[in-house]
Length: 384
Image (cartoon, rainbow, N blue to C red):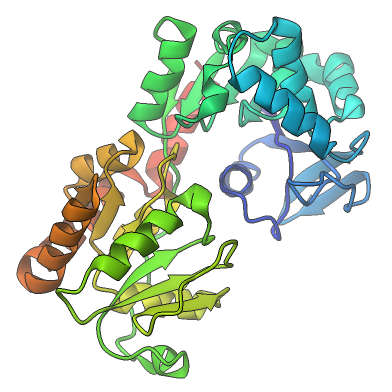
């Protein structure tokens, strides 16, 4: 089949979840199909500045065509329209202005879809909230497959989305909770669709050496947070809850760039960016992986932890996280400081039960998230 993937940014150096999901799927489907990535020259999702050259390249065997962004994000205009539309009562025009100001605004990419969209058998669009998807999908709706990566945040409430979510010819969802959320906004079940998550390769037999941890100065038992340390990821609440936890002698290790102030506490270690080897070692020896995010369409880091048989402790107020943990029986969830304290104490003091939860998480990944399983679901939808 001749396929196009439309995504706001693309490249191995881009760490975004939806962008990574698109790239991993593209690299595995490209040997089977005539596949082209249609994206922008932007690298930074805050500014949308043109950093990559426009035109065609081949990256890891995938054809990539980049189109220029018309202008950087207008931060004040975006903030103003966000305040207006999320207060409620905004007109359709103003809601559509939100998508335009959210960007990236690439008229050349939209022109390509108008002129050449009919030459593709299927066109997959990643992430409903960005301009290339919102304005591009209606141009090729008869062959469009939407990968919405929707979360329960303010953007999902915009009124124009009820109509938008009805337009695609098919849907790829990441979790059952995301499918239910998007279907509720459309007002009907959305078909044809598949719930695919993301594929993971089996981890090689893990080395037992803690040498990389010794180099990082990590001693004794620890629980792990992986990813950007950011209030939007629930890290402020995590730090508050952990500082109040005094029942166990354990360290909280934060592995990822910090976008907020981290308290000075000898039981909290902020490592910043870590190498892939250090990341694997951290997962191998962690007592638990904590995922505090209030909004997710799929937690890839949670699956990564289970791929190492690490039990999870997740924010139960996030339906996606709670659903993933329930289906896997791979951890515990919390909805308050008291529940966090109790759950963490249980995981740290019940080694056999903790290990069983980790093994159950790994079994869930084996059943649902190996690449052959994921690709079979995608291929079935492409030909439906």
